[in-house]
Length: 328
Image (cartoon, rainbow, N blue to C red):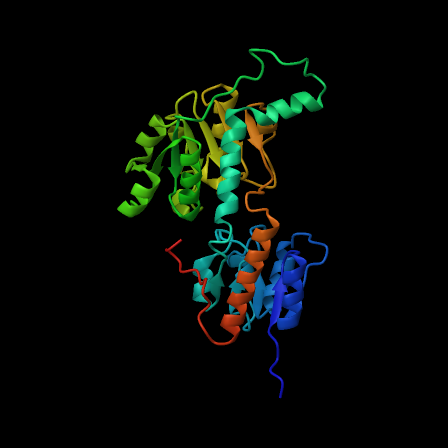
């Protein structure tokens, strides 16, 4: 007798190769038009699914999980961050949660470095000048930015992405400083020539570029509060490719407008996809639509990890990327 395939509900459109393999391996329900599911649609999905494959746009909170059917035993997240999933409620209901670590590291580090360069050298402003037809030719004082060679980079969160960024930063002549929950191994510090700051407050006051690379957890919500942002030097810039909730966005916006901080490069926002209208008016802010990991290779690699996690779980084994609450 043929074993029944598990019902896998996928909340967003995934790369074609991944969707094809999903259909081959499982009883998969795909999201063909790629519209984000409403809360009610998510509730209907968890009622019937054996496996749910959500993304960062899907809030799988206690209210949704309260409707989970008896067959839902795995949430195989398509993405690294799981702050949109109520891990405590999932655990209490016997639901395993997995994610897709490692595969987005290099892509996100590339984007972070690109934002550092873009803000420092005013690349987005220059591009807009050209498109508006307002460029009258080269001038010795036109579009002056700042060189990054010889500056200090402060990394908030020295995990995989933070370390990948540090390696790139060294190549651009930046000296690497970092704050982390735990100091990294001395071998890593030596490799990266990185200076550890136990006090985030002190690091913010001494660096020229601040990059946010830590996960969003209850402990890191508004980690860069208005008080901490005010510790940054007026010529400093802030780059965030992690999660918008880590930075007090209204405070950052006010400080950018008042020139208390020189610039910001943001790939994530506190209430995305909504963006503070005042941010949109600022020339010293480079804004991107959460595309830090948006490479074809990265998305396919993410999908393959999801497939492996589901197949391993269905076969009765512990999936390789099981998320353990408290160890994010």
